[in-house]
Length: 365
Image (tube, rainbow, N blue to C red; front, side, top):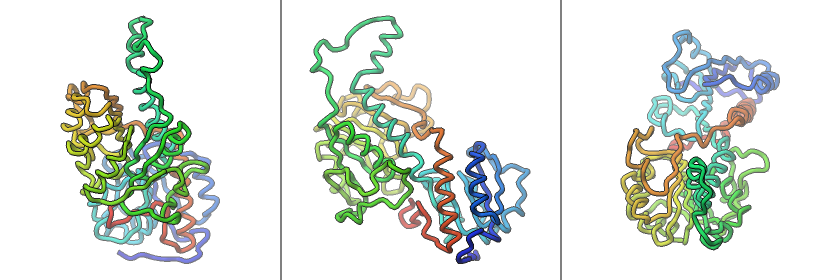
């Protein structure tokens, strides 16, 4: 594949962007991008998630395409020989890492990491507080028209302040979760694959909405790192009241949390929250840990299998809240996505390839 590099091309003359979107995009932002890069050709196609390419899309469109914004659809390497930058609409790239465009070329891929942080962090805190305050049980009593206290004494309801939350994967979602957690008085422990021993290494260079997240890595009181079971177990055994799973799904993280890990979490009776990917947690072991009350409960926005079949035993496990992968939903999703897209187009216009949220091909995210 031929990669064309044009330095200081402020108007992006000679460039063409194809955008596959599942929804109508904010017109004002598209207009602003076009105004900033007046010579950039932009073609937008509304394409439902996972659907095959619309027959109205002609293969010839790929020939002069240099930029692609997409969820799942990718051209064959030989179809788009001038492609210079692919912007994904998802926070992860695991669904595309075996595609020939990813494996057989050096075309940079960027994720939408950062667009999900605010809304997913809210989901995390909401589901934990709902569990702590027994809101699900009280909702059932309300439906039955019953005024009934589940606990007679105020001391029977635990406080959040002073507890400890462990965030497994300290990316944009984890950092915004840490911000909200600190506001509630929680102590934060962070786990990353690579060591973060210096202030510089703890900084986040991915996309962060202004005023949010933890760009400097200031919120955790303690950092853990490493890829071995021993290192992960040290983190899990650090007195966590809440465990948030926010690592990407890779061959290394599949089945990361299973029976041995639940036994460690059982020492504290940890509440588990998974907003990452279902296969990171062994489902059978999770069900056993819930029903035996080894852990206090779980909040799951992702499952394995997914969608979770009707009558699957996970639905009826003790103290579990399950939602159908909706924690990332937000009216600002595409606003933030297009902000990343615009910032990366700026870098492209400067001849740079250090795109924001650039996927590390070796790591797979």
